[in-house]
Length: 258
Image (cartoon, rainbow, N blue to C red; front, side, top):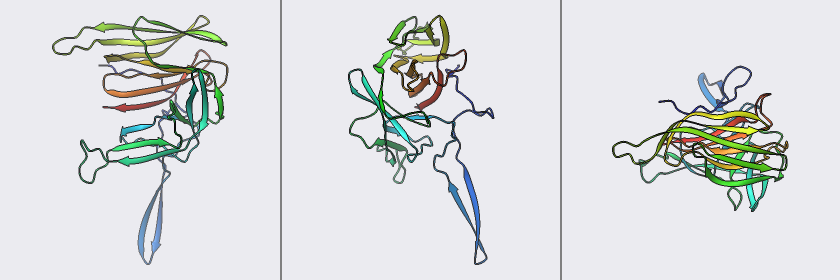
């Protein structure tokens, strides 16, 4: 069964954006004894890598986040009013009472230094600045197959067109299932498939937020592309990173599997 394909950008060497940890091995000879010191650049990322995260408790799947980088939180100040703020990230390993052994800590808790929780946390974008941004909280509006969702802003009108075929439940499975699901973004007669070959059951993907996050006068999107074996699959699409024939570019994913 195909898993969904989010078109992920690559760097110049052709490697996909998820970062690797740089490890430096230093050999020290002390009193005839060789001591190996391993220094890991904690969560250090390449300059071209963008990361996103969400506040909350998550299973620890080895994700590398650097709390010492400059993180920005997208906050809703009031209805229709949003702002980007530099936000201090705190990551802590925690004990899962339902499954952990005596010395295990298989969950992480991500928290911030603000009273309010941000919609999303973003790092790796040098062009980001603190201040107000134009946007709308869609509260995870369901993007059901064959639905048209219009997004209207002063700089232009956009439409999200979802498609997919139902696979009717069999046996004891009572949840509606879909395969071949995808989302097309439409603007000024230009069409771009931003999500394709997706399979899910139940409620499915939803639009979390739209607006001008990078302040270039064009649409940016945050979509929860949840599928059959993920708790959340938040995807950030930015117009400022789009190619010549694109409206937006997928720049980062926050994904947690069951």
